[in-house]
Image (cartoon, rainbow over all chains, first blue to last red):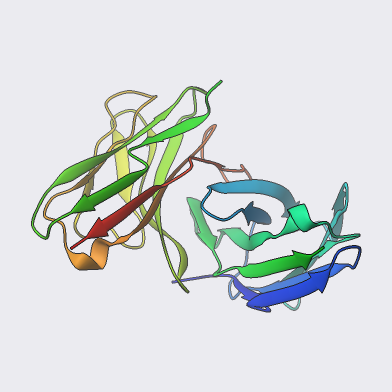
Length: 112
Length: 114
């Protein structure tokens, strides 16, 4: 069963705008990761945030984590057409060292 | 490094046929896993391995077998293909599989079972 659930399911914006995607989860976690999947390709790791961290940055990406609300958000600033992809959150923890559980993803379309 | 390599990229099977999806990594990763991705379902873990000779079941293991005889290879076997196994299959690996490690994914195998 999915641990993380992304919201919205789909998001369409113009180039240069910011894109925000949210992820909610149900049980305690050790860390939360975000991945990107371009159409027809495998997933690529973007960023990892640990349960004792509240915010993390990587280039144009900003991730926040609120463990009290069991939620995370991914912000992509100054979006580009090349950011068009599906974005997945994945959670680790909840009793297993090895299983990374993925959500269903948010499809982001950045229009030029 | 080639990373995680999956073959074939596309495959069409008839119901009842068997086949093996190949996965190889050249990063000396101990942890390897198989996911399937279905529309609207995200990725679901089929089987995983934390080292040569060690495998375990994931969320949806029925109808699939795995073995891990070497660190580099982790093949996924479909014993008797069913239309419900039509999906995109991804192999992923990480250094040791402990909590906190990112996964490296292959480019996927698109399987259709008629």
